[in-house]
Length: 188
Image (cartoon, rainbow, N blue to C red):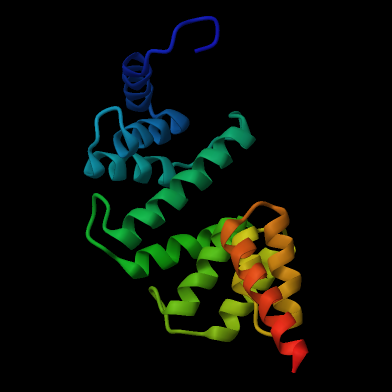
């Protein structure tokens, strides 16, 4: 806490009280508490994430806080539907939510939508569409997308380097492997 001691239980109770008064950010945080720890309950987490995601915001609220809360809630809903957390698995609903995020320009949403197209999650497999989404997200700085668009060696090295510079360990490992393979290949 700031100028007070931390009290997670009190914070949780305050989120619940504010949620009952339709406070969008409190609804998100109540869901987060149910999802990750205060009192674990995936079903209630899903319900609070859903309330937060479906809320219409008035212009009078802080648009930045509201839209961030909304994007996070939509993202969490997508994960809940994709993985069956607190709700039946529904890949079509997860796809729809990730698509909504992508259309709003969310980097993670773009990359997740690319992932859905890559593996047919809630949609037909479309490798070209997946690549386009990964490339768009990679160009905007998303490190996960940067290592997913690696088709040819030169581009792979370029994108693995970009992703590695941002600290992505998977990209760092793949870059090391490619560099070793390149040394071996150049010997022949």
